[in-house]
Amino acid sequence: MTHYGMMIDVSTCAGCDACVMACKYQNATPHGMYWCKVIKGEYGTYPNSGQTVLPIGCQHCTNAPCVRACPTGASHYDENGNVQVDYDKCIGCRMCMGACPYGAREFNWGSMDENPYYEGFEQTPYEQMRASEHPRGVVEKCVMCNGRTAQGKEPACVQTCITKSRVFGDLDDPDSEICKQIAEKGAHPLMEELGTRPSVYYVGLQ
Amino acid sequence: MAKTDIAGTAPRRPFSKTMLAVFAAITAVGVGCWVWQLMSGLQVTGLSDTNNWGSYMIFFMFFVGLSAGGLIVASSAHVFNIEPFKKVALPAVICSTVCICLAAAFVLVDLGGIQNIWRLFTGPNFASPLIWDVCVISLYLIINILDIVWIVKGDERKVNVLSRFALPTAIAVHSVTAWIFGLQIARTWNTAIMAPIFVASACDSGLALLILALVWLERRNIFRTGEKLFKSLSGLLAVFIAVDAFFIGCELLTMGYPGGSEAEALKVMAFGATAPFFWFEVVFGLVVPFVILVFAKNREKRGLVILASALVVLGVFCKRVWLMLTAFIAPYAEHVPTMMTDYLSYDAMTFGSVAPFYTPTLPELGITVGVLALGVLVFMVLCNVLLGKASADPAPAVAQKSEG
Image 1 (tube, chains in turn red, cyan):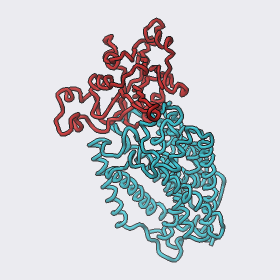
Image 2 (tube, one colour):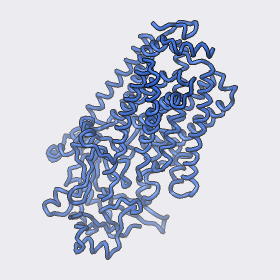
Image 3 (cartoon, chains in turn green, brown):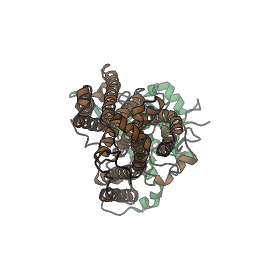
């Protein structure tokens, strides 16, 4: 079995948001919707202060609260051990949004043709082409770029990362680069104590 | 028409066509708003990804509670053979049926993909508390309707048997609603006492609503409850309020005592954004009505009983508001890295600042008011039709006279 996962080294993340933009371009997500986010924070008081970054999206839990909560089975595990949403089955009850501890899920409140990227302008041809991928009234989230991985490519955020802070691979293969790095750097998932068993690991969190 | 001797000397005044028309008109406006929402999507509401459930789900919780409370009183009368309470069984079950239909309606208007709703039946995920709720609410509705039919027919034996199923189902229906929230590890809702709290608040708000409905029906001489029964219902309400307050107190102490991250959520409730709702509930929803009703003398004064009942209903509504919204303002209290909470809980400590997270919009309020008006409309029609028939039944008339 393959089990796709990701390791993010926050200590080398520059907070450039390139992954956020790569994700938007790859998945053509609607205006205001971000499957991949980089949360910025600050700590301390001057002069003992600094900035923090936290790249975050769906953690693709293997004991996912959202999959349990979904009444119709729209949220489900795919063959790669990742969590996916079947929009045809989604009734838009938003139960999964309440269930997710990571705030990874976003709802399509309106439709794409009413909310173009550039306010006051028509949709771009690219938006028009891909609007049908984001139906109104369903919950969306990171899909671990399942279209790209099926072609043997890495997810867009991993490919684009300028500091190589993201590592993608098969968690079930002990010889994979990601498994080696997780062991070597001592990476852990976020909020491990909840028992959600995420497929995304972090190292270097402050 | 019904016999007026039941209602005392004054003639029975059923709800007039004008009243029905007014509420039908409000309902129509609500339906209009709903059609607009269906056409434009849920973007017409004040909901957002940060605060993804709002007034619809608050009213859903509220009405499941109101409904369960009514049926608990009605079925207890038969299960425990409390003779005087049996008299109000019919108005109680009518009240409860209307409320559960409203609860279901509030879920339906909250759905973003209502066109896919058949998926609930073709591919249900039985691990989801929402599916449990669909099952138990359906069962509950069937029991309610059978109850009405058999009470109206006067089939005492069937009502007795049915009540033995109705009581546990009424408790289950509100427990399952509590679990929709209480089983989510991500939120401050995640506590084992959620179901007991919901059942306790169902009992007090449901009984309080029943008392208000009975007062209204008595004023219009549609149904006469009698002083003695009002007094004992008020006494029961005082007990229910005390139980509710006890459970809430247990939960608040457990949240606040360790002084850790759960205490942060308590701070938002006590001093922050949802504080107005929290303190209204504690002071006017629990303390004041309890202090009024705990004295036997006050329970004889109709005005005070009405005031206390209205405060309990409003108080429990406020509780639904703070319960729902605090969880979105102070999310993931326990475990999240601090930078994530910073990002998600801006302004949470400004007193009464629910607005930055969620303000219901006009169409949203239109739909809400429309559904409420539909409920009042159906209640009036059912009372006009059913309570007329029941009053004609000689059996309760005898009970009525013997009571004086």
